[in-house]
Length: 160
Ligand code: HEC
Image 1: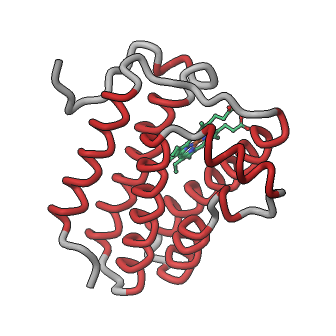
Image 2: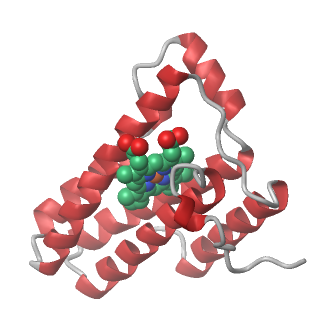
């Protein structure tokens, strides 16, 4: 079994709070053109996968749901074929809050893959919706220039 849900939810909350505290107004990433384009490529794959997941979920296509969630789980920009310099750049350019949101995101994809394995539709739908929240949490904190719709979006769960 995976970590109890309350623990996962608590750590997501922590990650969100940490990201917010560290970058009160959100902090877009400053990446070189090359690394940025790798990240965008990664994101487009994730976005395609997310659409596939929705349809698999709607049609109880457990195999597609599992395989796609597992693909998202392991598609991780830091695991890409990066040069040593690019790895170094990423390690330093990515704020801690970003890394936490990213880790949560991949953990969520893994939970979704497990729910698909268990053929538990309600649980899979739950993890899918939390996965989408993960996209928005990261974009609203770290990609406001790319997604200006988040300009006035304040992540929930933070104190002043
Ligand atoms: C941990 C952070 C993080 C998570 C989680 C995340 N993204 Fe992103 N995403 C980014 C950042 C940062 C950019 C902006 C990259 C840039 O253009 O500088 C981005 C850009 C994108 C883009 C635009 C790519 C392009 O070609 O310009 C799409 C589409 C996208 N994300 C989809 C998703 C979807 C769908 C999810 C969730 C299933 C998701 N992302 C989860 C950080 C994240």
